[in-house]
Length: 331
Ligand SMILES: Cc1cc2nc3c(=O)[nH]c(=O)nc-3n(C[C@H](O)[C@H](O)[C@H](O)COP(=O)(O)O)c2cc1C
Image 1 (cartoon, helix red, strand yellow):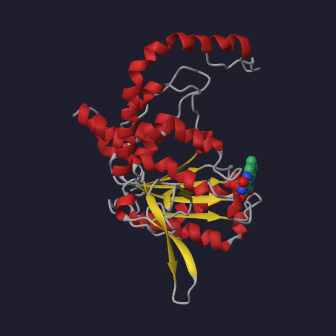
Image 2 (spheres, rainbow, N blue to C red; image 1 turned 30 degrees about the vertical axis):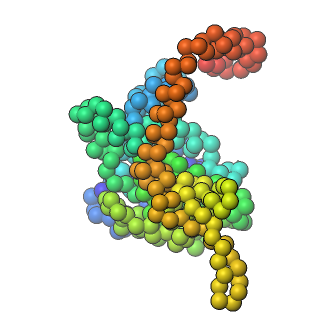
Image 3 (cartoon, protein in one colour; image 1 turned 90 degrees about the horizontal axis):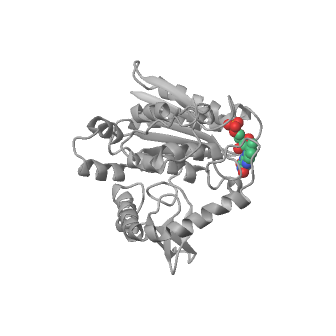
């Protein structure tokens, strides 16, 4: 078994300490030959510019970018660690109510559509036999645990932590089996004073190992949340009583109820059909894939007619683009 930690915070900081606590607990319940390592995401060297043609590599690999000798590309190495892993534990601090931008940057440049299983299945169908080993690795079952660490006292300053962390792992079909948000961890290493946080991290480390390798891994987190798929509580209210899970896209309804004492309440209900739109399911990812194929086919024939307008906008660079001291503009 291979267990990979991903740390999104400061060196030896609160989120990294909780990650190591979880890894130690995971080690205790793992076979002796288990390989454990962790990566500090802020250390990962990522070349600056997007190459949109990379996206066709939605097969569990990523093409090395060596355009800039000053910024080596660590992404293929880290992605390989992720691909080999059976268990991933991601631990991040909260910065301005969400995860650190550098973690999101890593996600955008390395994960997402590059490793999307729905895209990979389509690609595999159209080019059978190609990259079979990579597909096998991409499609193997993986489980994850998420730890979010905030300095603030309550949820009002931590709402987008766990929901955004989910976005890192769903394209690859990684099943989150445990997750928690810590509050009040405001000073370096102060998490060591929080015995409840330490024991939750230990519980998470053991929980992820117990579900490793299972296609039908169970959610074992201590808070079930209103969404039955991502187990979080962030809801988008649509028209009427229709709702959507902001984290995973499951569709549902708000339903009014009244208990025996006459007390009224409103509950979020996500039935089996509504769960099919969640990006945590292959059907949900497929809906999106078909949607972007449809949009692309409608727009592509019109692109040649835009060339001259596009050039006009490009010309405005010479007039308005501020010259950065580093002179690292992309032209
Ligand atoms: C730039 C910055 C923004 C922060 N914003 C928040 C916030 O919005 N909510 C919160 O609960 N804590 C916030 N914090 C506090 C950190 O989440 C907290 O100190 C955490 O323990 C740091 O984790 P680390 O030691 O792993 O780096 C912020 C810290 C920094 C440096």
